[in-house]
Image (cartoon, rainbow, N blue to C red):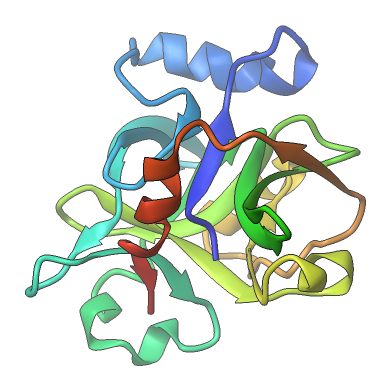
Amino acid sequence: MCGRYYFMWKNNQAFHELRRKVEQYALCEYAKEEVFPSQNALVLIEEGDSYRPIIMKWGMGTSNSQLVINAREESVKERVMFRNDYNHHCLIPCNGFYEWVNSTNGKQKILITKKDHELIYLAGFYNRRNEFVILTANSEKEMRSIHERTPLIVTQDKISAFLHKNVNPKVDNDNLRIQQVPIQHKQEQLSLFKDFEV
């Protein structure tokens, strides 16, 4: 699944159009660097023939006060809580996402990026309360040794097609860059299991 992701602006061509759009809509109060569930994050939604950036909360609340942050792509249409929302496509821009693997010293934090794309977009959908979840599917290739689930990635050339529902995202576990990163404090390990996927 995807329990955290990383977003930071870079001064290169991949970020140019997105930055221009964000400045056009004067958006500024959204999470950067390591993004956690329940934070307000930068999201792209359909607007006319193009897209617009907007700020939404990561995670959909349930009736028992839990926070759903991911949805399984293969069963999302069958879930009652998503019945009215799964067609509201959105994209979450990021540099990469985090996973945790077991090691001899406990949980090891991993940052996963794409070697060939400094900016990627995670596929998701949102509800009327401006809450979003990230779509996941079964991992493939190298990613399978890290986690059985992987977020669905959309590249820049497919932004419009996905938002306008002209293409379904596929698992893209090619050309991954996998880096170990330090866990900042023990409380971070304790929080790994509070949010969930359905």
